[in-house]
Image 1: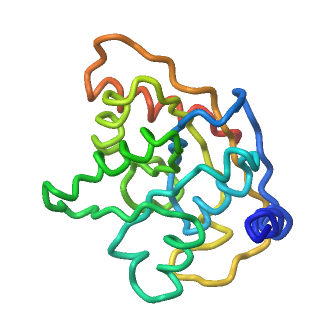
Image 2: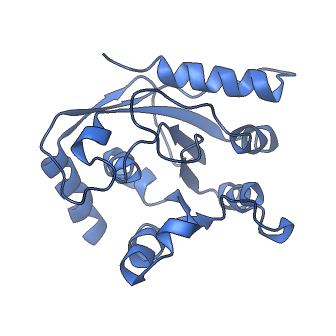
Length: 200
C-alpha cells in the first residue's frame, strides 16, 4: 500500500509524461536501462511502471553514495530493494554483473544506468561494458531503453527541492537480439536506440 501511495505521489507532484513505444506485458525479467542526470531518475521510472512489474523491479545503486547514512540506506535498500554495487573496481568476489545476473535469474527486473554516473543532461555519455556482459549472459531477458528528459532541471545536481517543470519519460521497445554482435557494436547500438527516443 505504501508503494502505491509513493508511486501516485511521484506521478502527481513531478508530473512526468510517459510515452510507451513497446508493450510491457507480464512480469518476465527485464533490464530497464536509461540515461542518468538526476537522483529522481530511478524514482520516476519506478513510479511509471505498471504495479505488477513495479513490485519486481530493483534499481541498481552506487554503494559509495547510497550506503551513506541511514536515510539513504533505507530509501535505496529497504524501501526500493536496490542492489548496491561497487562502481570503482570491486573485488572479484563482488562482481557487479554477477550480482545483477543473480537478480534476473530469480525472475526479477532491474533499473540500470549504463553511463555509470550522472551526466549533465545535455548528452548521453558512452555506455560502460557491464551492460553488454549482462545482455550477453542473459539471452532470455528483455532490455528496454528508457529516455528521461528534463529531470536534471527539475532536481539539479546539489539541490534538494524539485522545481515544478515538465518532464518526459519514453519507454522504447525491447532491443532486438543480434547474433555475433561485438561488445562495442552492442554498446553503440544500445546508446543510439536510447538517444533516438528523445522527443524534442
